[in-house]
Length: 362
Image (cartoon, rainbow, N blue to C red; front, side, top):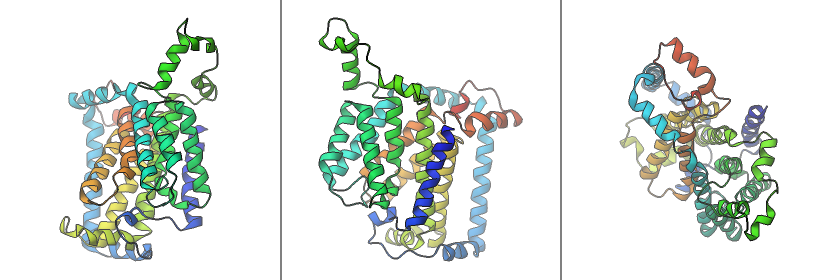
């Protein structure tokens, strides 16, 4: 039921965009922007080119072969097993990773004069800096994350549909609510004071803890990977489909500005289509929990390439995406995922060697 609810919210993003039709592309950060181009013209240009079809087919075959090879041989490669175990051992640091991933860009957004996304030039310095610093400090962490979540939803549902571009904040805020403050944090220090006999705060012993209330609702830390990957995946699908395929003129402007066809000598149309295809594919893999750690690593590579390839791209706007991708490398897919259901059966059918890794961390 929780999975269906989360997927329904993700689907609502797409419906909201269809209703508004006014989302601003990431490329507006680095170009002056032009009128949206035709998705039909983009697809016609790509699929009428024999070279483009050959390149796309070759890329699909290579990606499929890599996935099959990974499923078949990863269980017998000690290096991959050690990498999995090492990443899983970082779970105690997950709350701190999430707080950094949300707190830092919020402080930066507050001082830079935009609301969550550089596309929304609204000065909310006191609010965003306050939320950011409290998250970094780890004080009233869950309550502050809920305030941030409600602020984002209020702004999105109000007059700023462009905030769909920053929908990764949903993943971050929800993740923080689910996993709590962790260590180091002011909340944990205060909690130890409460638990220690003889302290002034010990008189508050016996009060219900936030995690107890959430647990009664079925919202435990085990749900965090699901919430993070669903909304992060929806964000990557949005980036690929809406920004690239549905606004090809703007995306082609970026290709021209940075002379990307000199880096990879293909047509601008294929550049735009290919970039959208990769982002959308990563998003689908994350949303469905398919080879999640690999998809999160691919997302990290995409973001890093953008960071160094587009020198005037706003770095702070991508800190949350970097942090959430890193978090999924640590957690894996979690429950309700292809990794925990279909992937183990595929491994057995391919005759893969045994692995001690959790099914959810494929």
